[in-house]
Image (cartoon, rainbow, N blue to C red; front, side):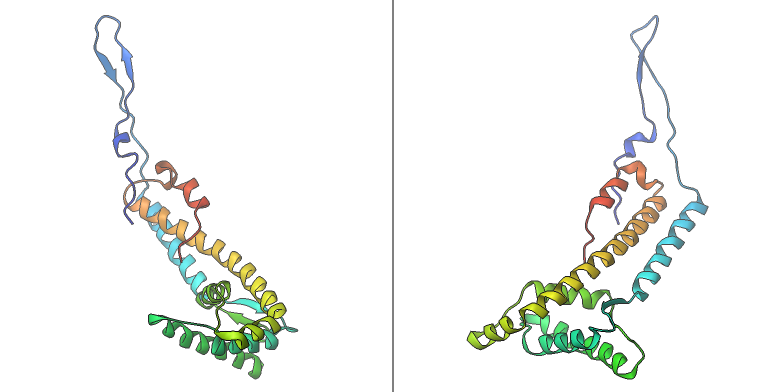
Length: 202
């Protein structure tokens, strides 16, 4: 990332003080802080650890009572009700693989809850936020399943809110490390507060 050099000019900050006997001003040199090699390595390790932790995380969207019901609904929804265009067909096929794999873990007893990783959650949130169909029959089918649809959508939305909070921490760790590599502390270039307010890009 190209760190914004907002304090580049602050390498030597100056203040002007009137001289007692002349019109000249006196420039006072202020040396800014720079991260040490140890801190840079620490920030790098923290970022890499957060990436590993995030990538390995699996999130429950169906407890013991609802796992199979949710899994079956989402498999059916992805099979018959998701529309696609251009290259989005790849996502539909990949999502089918993810859903069937999660369902098979329920069947085998490996899992008691219906669990998915981050990217499938983002996919489901996107397609369920933009439902589409063709003709009267698909509209009636959607209406008949609206309560369950809304229930599952709310669960996915909540899970994704938690996931995105973790993603934001990973993003912040990356920014801190990259700022340190360029000789700055993240808080010194005004990005600390900005990153806490930003929603992560996915």
